[in-house]
Image (cartoon, helix red, strand yellow):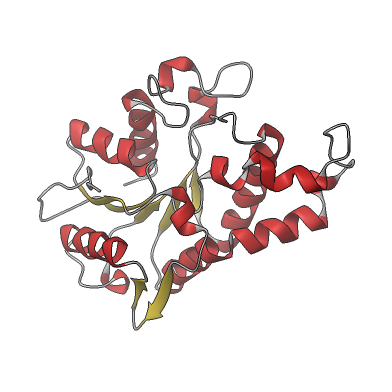
Length: 231
């Protein structure tokens, strides 16, 4: 898997790590001449398992290829370990909401009419389920924060494929925003600029012939927001 954010430079603005949604961010940064290191390390599902272990001042990815890409990303940011990174960390880890909202996983919580009980998506059971499936990704953010990094998490494109339940997608997003901000992670949110009146991604910001990803214009919105945040 390529790391499209990679730009050989002595002074990157940030380190980018995440799933495939990180690709368009790296590409947009490259086009704009914004120096950074990193890019996608794996697919969204790869971050829903126990994907890393702690190391002194660092983390180690359990999957060899992911760790190789991670080490390459650190080198591009001139850091031998995560704890020695001197620029912000920008991440899409754990924010593959279409995967978390996979429709068949939630059928057992619905009635015969396909509806959830009133309050389910804002209730304690849903929160507990989200805490379980998001635990590995949240542990990643907690470790980055413990290493005293500035951490920014980028919300994904607001695109819900047929395999996902849009109600769960939105509820999971609300829960994750609240949880990440509670940890001290800055959330990069371009929904106001990228969405249409339905609350989903406007076609102008969607990758053509692709049900999930944003396009270059979407990536540019994110990079612009990162620059406004001081990166």
